[in-house]
View 1 (cartoon, rainbow, N blue to C red):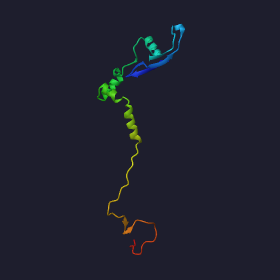
View 2 (cartoon, helix red, strand yellow; view 1 turned 60 degrees about the vertical axis):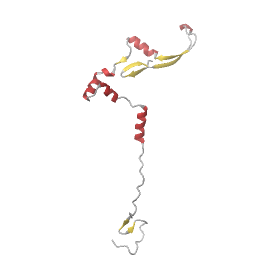
View 3 (cartoon, rainbow, N blue to C red; view 1 turned 180 degrees about the vertical axis):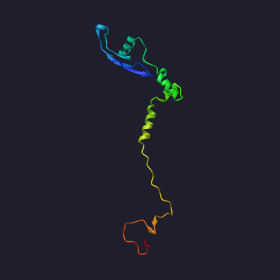
Length: 134
């Protein structure tokens, strides 16, 4: 089955690496490893009589129209839609998963936490005898 790789809307044969066994009927006396463009994809291109399949993205009328609507050149528009590099994608992923921790706020010196002159410590026990009645 042919396999292709896309470059800006044009489809070219992808790379292939395969072991070719020895075959006396085809004058192959020893097996070898084939490395190069996909042979099945090259056969499809030869059958069609073309160098590549597809259309160059820079010549696509829909992309040209959309770039004009946004006030950009076609190359700027295509650059904007390129997938991010692996390093950029990793930074973005870390930003999304980052957990923000906040330090405990230290109270200012000299500020006491009292209500109506009573300290805010302890439970709901008896109030001191000298406490004002509310």
